Length: 349
Image (cartoon, rainbow, N blue to C red; front, side, top):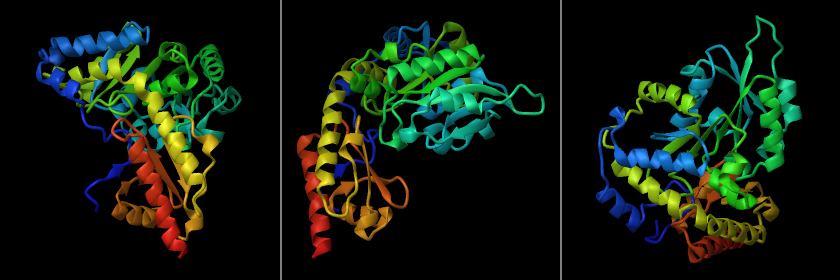
């Protein structure tokens, strides 16, 4: 593999910035299980303030944040409505079933964006021998739909109507700051209707580890023992929480750069023979394209591409995902596009 690699596998591959490393080295710490880590407490308070919520809870991962929220708001034997390509359904080890004891009710939606009409039709009737719907879970941005964004009015409609039906609404907002930037809206505004929100510090915001759950004070109190039960009780976690505070301060303001780089990539790829992509489908920092017409499946395509110095991941047999992030600047994105074009040109020869 070439010495200089363009890593587009995910926005989770970023390294801590110099300022993050300094904050981590200088962090004031205590035992967070006892609620005594001052840096963790500041991170939680800052997250709650940004989202205009009563409280927040620091967790090791987005998967734990989603599972904790589900367990706090549902009971075993109930159902959670979610999108069929969503992260909680496909990439969290079936934890809602195996640990929370709830059944996912997966609905396919165009571009991963559920409508209230779809959701309403899937709500179980109040019959005692049927698993009852307890929650709706949305994903914004939607990872495997290519970083698509929920319109604000669609979210408002879903939250209001679901609450009228007695349902909780959770947001897997791993990349919700990307959604806010794409919409030109405040992150608190676009999440205001949800009962619970999970967002990641370790994706577009660039921190090395961690996610947060935000919600009411009473909800977070219920989440705290669940986090402990799942193995998420951390001790002197201020060392990593310090990087999260820097990420919250610096990260959102530069996400537009990642979006612009993703659109540049999509435009370049659209002109490469054998690659199929609609550049207009790229809304944030995720670029998904088909390689079906190249004569290779996605795994074979990625092996050849990695040998040239570009790393990415497969979505399925025919599709590949590129994710732009803080550690990939415009020159690196240009290089990645050039290498894909050169690769396909040589294949045609």
